Length: 232
Image (spheres, helix red, strand yellow):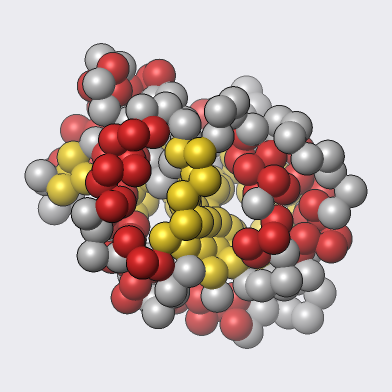
């Protein structure tokens, strides 16, 4: 299994903190957020990691150059933001025939994710992707899912005013090796695509949910950032 860490975002909701530091490097209890992800992936035995960078890219590149995991990492610098889906399409050669875990590096997760990987390994044959889920107290700000008794997702509502519940997408995915051919092959390169809006809806009925077994936070606002600080 390979990993892709999406780390190119501008972090606008977290300003002024992100005026001078990229969102993926904001400190959580004195450690850059990215360091938690790299350690977690190493503990899962993942040895090939792609990280895209854009905003304050030099800071991320400098950090990675000093990381103990630097030999596992390929950095891709985007001169223009391609969106989460566009980044995956443009870097298809890295992952298209592989199982890959796709992570938004501006989230904070205390789970070791072994349960997610184990769940994916025993998924139903027709399922192409596993999606981390968490319970949200702000469901209108999230992608909300509806699952059946087998944890297969049959509805996905992206930031709607009247969501049918509070079980939310953590935007952390495990793709099977069939995903590129089925969902990405026909997309255009060098084009902006949002993974949750443009691609995930096409996977309804073909993805399973896994409810996270520890804290999971989108470090998107000063309030959520402060909450994360109290967890370590």
